[in-house]
Length: 95
Ligand SMILES: C[S@@+](CC[C@H](N)C(=O)[O-])C[C@H]1O[C@@H](n2cnc3c(N)ncnc32)[C@H](O)[C@@H]1O
Image (tube, rainbow, N blue to C red; front, side, top):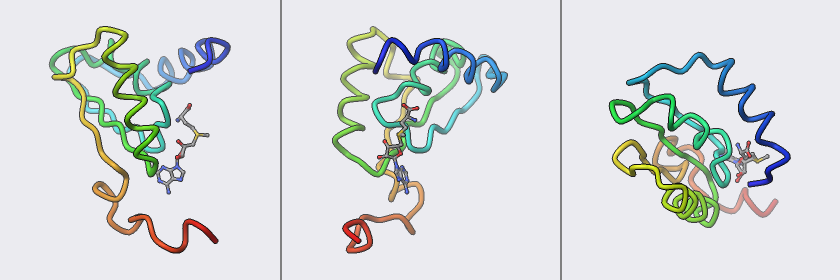
């Protein structure tokens, strides 16, 4: 995550009006810039679902969430094809 993007991230998350207990789906989460910004807002009663087609980026996102000290009880991980089976990786990815 690039620190230069934190202000952008904070503006996006603020604009989403996320409240305690909400369930947030971050599709195309990458390494988690936006979803991680949402974590403090949903609190322990909420969930942020991180979803990306790249399992490498999802792994990096998971590392960052742990490094930043967030409770993983409020986190869910989804390769995007589990959430949206239509996007299961296939030959289309290399075209
Ligand atoms: C420009 S990055 C944005 C990452 C992150 N949301 C952020 O703001 O830093 C786009 C992300 O979308 C993911 N992506 C691309 N195609 C996707 C698809 N069909 N379904 C889910 N994620 C996808 C990429 O792997 C990449 O992590």
